[in-house]
Length: 84
Image 1 (cartoon, rainbow, N blue to C red):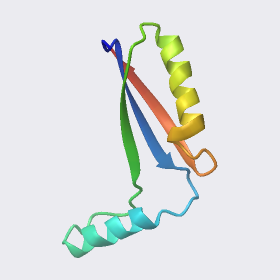
Image 2 (image 1 turned 90 degrees about the vertical axis):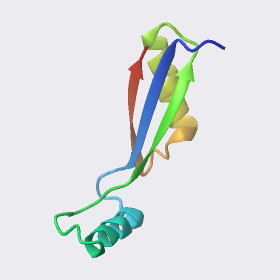
Image 3 (image 1 turned 30 degrees about the vertical axis):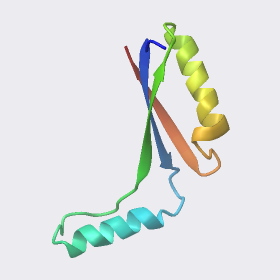
Image 4 (image 1 turned 30 degrees about the horizontal axis):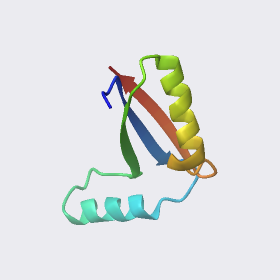
């Protein structure tokens, strides 16, 4: 399969959802001497290569992937970035 488009999907917790992993990262950074670090939120990055030329179709397919598998839309939000 030849890649036509590359996508990056950023999945993060929605505002207001507790993020214990982000909190632990923030505490660890503070303990390592990074005193200027405040609140930390963590998420995940998913990179996908698509055999698709039509950007609108690619975005629609990616939204469907996010809704069905990549993000738990009850507590997570996602952003899609596309490039050729």
